[in-house]
Image (cartoon, rainbow, N blue to C red; front, side):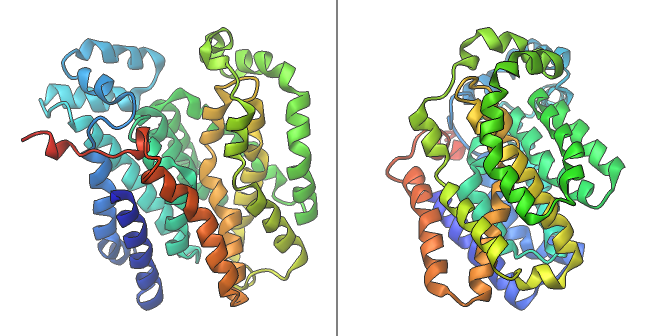
Length: 369
């Protein structure tokens, strides 16, 4: 229930902000958004036994020598955060406060940049919580999702051709979790931005067949670019996901197909025509989504590709965002309602009747008295 309160409360709050204030000044936006950012932060920070790795991360506090592994692996962001916590005797729960604060700051800066580019933050926040799973998965995969949260902001700076800031974010991502080395793929993806919409659509529907045909090359690819994960090829991590699991991950595919129909056959949404900054971000986001969406296919044979695909799951937001704006511009409120129900239905089930793992929330404060 706590997740639904954050979802609906935050979406309504951002909607009212968008309608009546819509500031683009940094300090004004920070203070206006602070109440929602605080609740967004406090729930993961005060989690208790959410997911499978909760006590593993807490136990490092009593056995700090174990975190040396992360220094050796080069995951220095997590290593130095935990070392700071231990040396200053901040307590075993502190790692969740620090990691969540890190992720919340990254989300704020990303949303602020999107606000300045004329995106509707109420829609962005709604889709971020319901379809990406990042908010929930960060409670269990602390290191991995610190890296994942660096990638959207790196994308924003790369869209603006701010290469130094992009490099800093990519280094932060990789230093949080080495799997975020896939963020380097953002750089060559920029080459595809000039492609026409029709060519991008063709590429989207062609790529699953290309990835399947290249599946036999995955071991060589992993050994060359992800050598640290070479041992996964002969471990349980290489076990492919089931077809049933794959189909559950393709839940949003009908919406993506509908997006292409709208994107190719209908006139552009109003803000796309009016704002060059919006177009710059949006065009690049669609390229990233097109290239990375079908990584899930590779998970049929090599399960660890699911983690690599999750690094780009933030970009699921943009085609569905476009659908929302198109339907709102068209004043097609019935379709807006249907779209919202389609998105909300699985999320509501995940956090209520079917709640488990990262979707089953418990709070540390209730266990500390």
